[in-house]
Length: 216
Image (tube, rainbow, N blue to C red; front, side):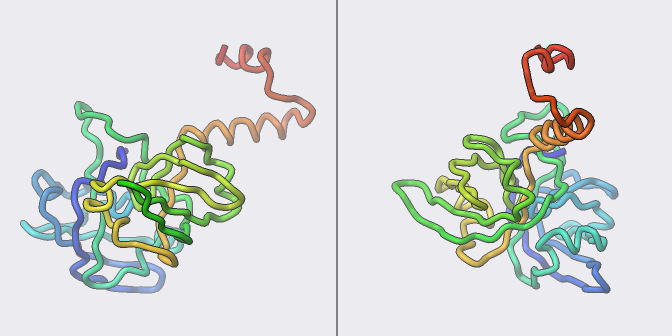
């Protein structure tokens, strides 16, 4: 489990591409302080398992499902990468619940500065857009952000100078793809309600429904 607060920007040192799979080596600093084999690390928002490490690098395997669902296969040697260690049980919860299980990829369609912020419009697949609400949470390349607009198949996010400088998003612009993770709680609620609709197609969300299911 992660919080979406990026700890450092690492660098892709090497990548070995196989048939819809990868072996990647990332040069890092901070996340290596207490690394162990089998640890979970968020790599551009993707939860990967540490397979080996040195005092300067860490290695990961990327399986076919992750290869197909994320942007990792589009990276090249020297690419900057957002890195975050799994959340410590006693640590501060600075962002929101982020699993590192990417729901799909989006494409940045605009990038506009306004005062001390930069607004991005990101185009999403049709099947993802209904999970987002105004002022809700979204993880973009593993960065916890707030949704400031939802229109058609696009969401709007805003980055402050710190986020621009300390995540890979600051260097991205129109045409670039990003990894998207929907709000975890929203996904569970949507799945639950879809199940209710399937079992009881004429039913609607009501006070009685919430009471019967322990919500009120």
